[in-house]
Every structure is written in structure tokens, then in C-alpha cells.
Image 1 (cartoon, rainbow, N blue to C red):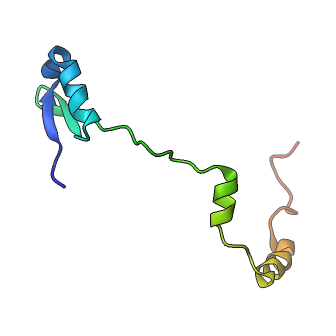
Image 2: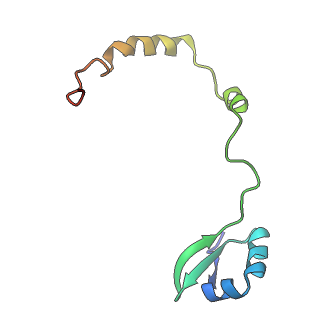
Image 3: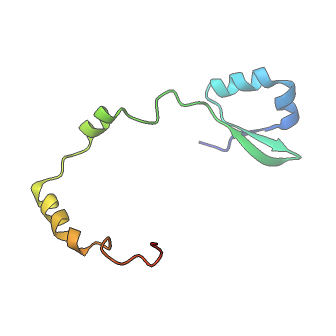
Length: 88
């Protein structure tokens, strides 16, 4: 995948509908001001970036008993019981 096509802000202003059609069709465009890149116009993702909690939990492997034992053993070693000098 190469560099995005550059489009001057003037062309974006004058041809906004055409530019947005290109982006909607999947093209990424780099907007420039005085030949200096200032923004990227990228197509909006069609799939969600997040999963419902139910789907996420189904995809995550369950911890085995050994991990639970290791976590229990590590709990006394946490710093939660240290004095907090900032506590009032």
C-alpha cells in the first residue's frame, strides 16, 4: 500500500462532495495546506471496534486453577498494605 494521494485544502473546499465520494469508496487522502500535510481523510470502518461483553468473554480463554493459586499466593506481596505518605 503506497502513500495516500495528496489534496490541497483548496480542492477539498471546492470539491468536498467529490472528495468524500473518493474516501467513501475506500481511498485515503492527505489534506495539505501550503504543501504541508495537516490531516488524513480515511474511510470509516464498517465493523465495530468493540465486541459485546458476551462475545469478548467467550473469546477469552479461562484461567486454570494454577493461575488462581499463583494470584492468591501473590496477594500478600502487593503494595496495598504500605503506608501512603499522601493519605490524610
